[in-house]
Length: 309
Ligand code: NDP
Ligand code: OXD
Image 1 (tube, rainbow, N blue to C red):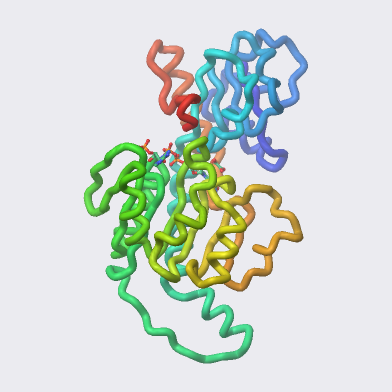
Image 2 (image 1 turned 30 degrees about the horizontal axis):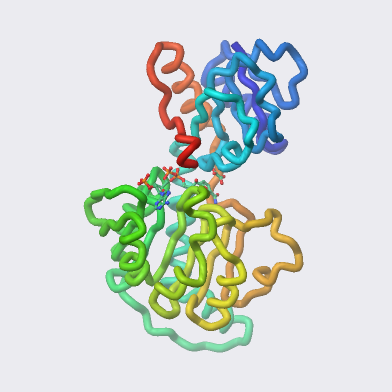
């Protein structure tokens, strides 16, 4: 059996080593592969060109290198009937939890204001607010959102989560569906977006959403750039309805040099690095899943392509 690997050039060697350590018998071919297509049973990929996986007629599963599968779901020529598996692995989850905590604490502790004061040599204390009085709202209570919610709640924040289906989670207030969105937003001083990008969530961070937040609320956007209506966010930042934003993902990546977000004084931005799949832990997860399939058990973390996540 062989697995076809398509990753960025920087992490290619690390993936090769990690996959070999997880299963020394597995043959791994790097992308692009022009050998016998019938040899390829599994694809482990990020952003394959449209239609490129079709030629592997014996493909048994497509593993996404990332948690998001929008890079695959957007391909109308994906091979029919081949399961698509999203990435769930402890390194990716831990990295996202760190980033969410970083974003929440940045806004909670007024770091944008202090950075502005530093630039102008102003020494001024801003009264601190107890974490219990700061309401954090996490959109998406899946693998990443639920872990982040628990860890932010453990720091003492008042945490709520919003999902599609109803959920119960100790220590977290939960809201769901369209009817739950407004009350969830109304109590979110810091809004974190950890939704997948789907037909339903595209553009969800828009003027209406921002208007439903408490005035001056902060945004931590780490799901996908397609969630954000960028003109609406700029207007909300300029009016003060949104007090500050941590933005990791953008509609166009790399973010074009002319984007107003680069120089916006109320924005901290990072180049889609909130979390990264860690080859060592991820290779073990992928190999364990392949072993399940070989043992006749159902694969874990198969996505519903019609639902989009
Ligand atoms: P999951 O599939 O585990 O969770 C998705 C969550 O979103 C679920 O709780 C789901 O609700 C909820 N959801 C989906 N659609 C809707 C909707 N229409 N209304 C309300 N809730 C909805 O995903 P992960 O937690 O693993 O990952 C989330 C996303 O994070 C990824 O898709 C990716 O885009 C992004 N990401 C970004 C990274 C970065 O570096 N910036 C790194 C990794 C991931 P329900 O539970 O009811 O199904
Ligand atoms: C992911 C990502 O989806 O890196 O994992 O964005």
